[in-house]
Length: 161
Image 1 (cartoon, helix red, strand yellow):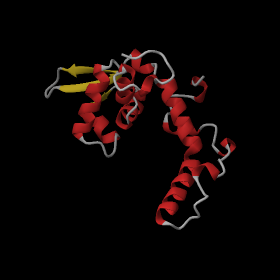
Image 2 (cartoon, helix red, strand yellow):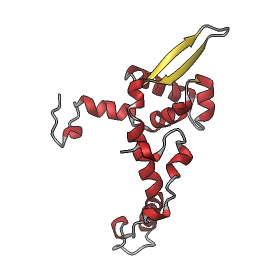
Image 3 (spheres, one colour):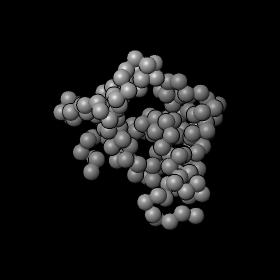
Image 4 (cartoon, rainbow, N blue to C red):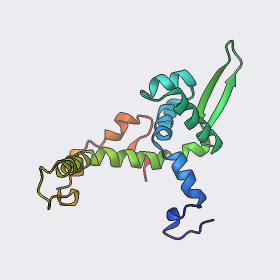
């Protein structure tokens, strides 16, 4: 078990570590973004999430459903269809994911610079003293105020506190 110490996520047996891993992985975040406008059937979601395999989508949806983040509804049609939606518990992640998305959009140029500097160091084409920490940080003023709305139109920047 784990306590509420600052190093809580460092403990391998802490349940919060497993939940964080299951809720914040790449496909889970993208699935929740795909479901932002309402329920979707499995195949529609697979088409929207370019690059996801059927197996990865199935596994991620099952994890999200097990954790109460996504609801699965069987539709009695011929053939039977399955629809997924975000639960009220899943909706509580909106602010956290919006903040992460905003951070990503704001710092994408900084991350690209850091990656380029790293790659040049690995190839031996950059002086040793240059590190990601020594690179200038892009101004947040260069990021449009509505950058988050471009990817998460259902979530306005006013929702993030």
